[in-house]
Amino acid sequence: MTGRLEGKVAIVTGAGSGMGAAMVRRFCAEGARTIAVDVSGAQDDTARDAGANCVPVHADVSVAVEVESFVRLAVDRFGKLDIICNNAGIQGPLGLTADYAEEDWDRVIAVNLKGVFLGMKYAIPEMLKIGGGSIVNTSSMAALVAFPTLPAYSASKGGVSCLTRLTAAEYASQNVRVNAILPGAIDTGMTRGMPKEYLQGAIDATLMGRIGRPEEIANLALFLASDEASFITGTETQVDGGYTLV
Image (cartoon, helix red, strand yellow):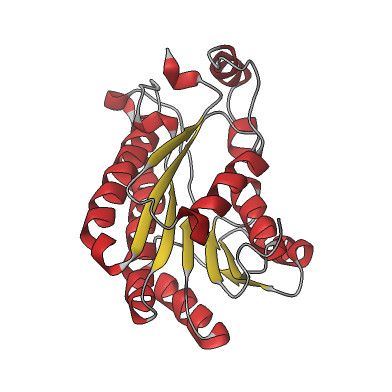
């Protein structure tokens, strides 16, 4: 099936690599005009790969004026906003809670949780103008189970899941759907940067016995963003190869 997002306008944050880049490529292939947002500069490479329907934007999702700006760009450039995937996230350093640096905590929360809040804050009014839209937030299986030495990351993703449910309830009657994806161990720069024993432990605990692919997350994001998911809101879907089953 092709053209599942034909006529739609989307924003994807964290679009420079990994899951975000996979979402951008898939959305553009399915007909969406897409704003690819990242702070790294790699969003330009993603946009080149995705084709003419993609516009790269350099922005920090934790800065309100920058989020407001790329939402405005989407509307000014393409006339509306149907979809936002609040995917940008950082892991932060490893450390026990009592040893964790306050500045590291603040930065992780700012990107992972405040960034999702800001994305929804500025996207929702534009969606209401056109009678609805779809928001897809990237949470994590760390929102469900404990990952010692990742206090800020885990707290931020728990917050994303809670905020997803709350916002879905607030706007369901106005046809703004809000859902979360909870990835497990996925082959991205973030996981490749983990200590090998930490990543291997996650893979060993995954019932399917392997790491996931960014495209497997993008497949779900596509479905949730599309009209095929028109009666789905407030969900949190694990894409973790069975990690959280046991």
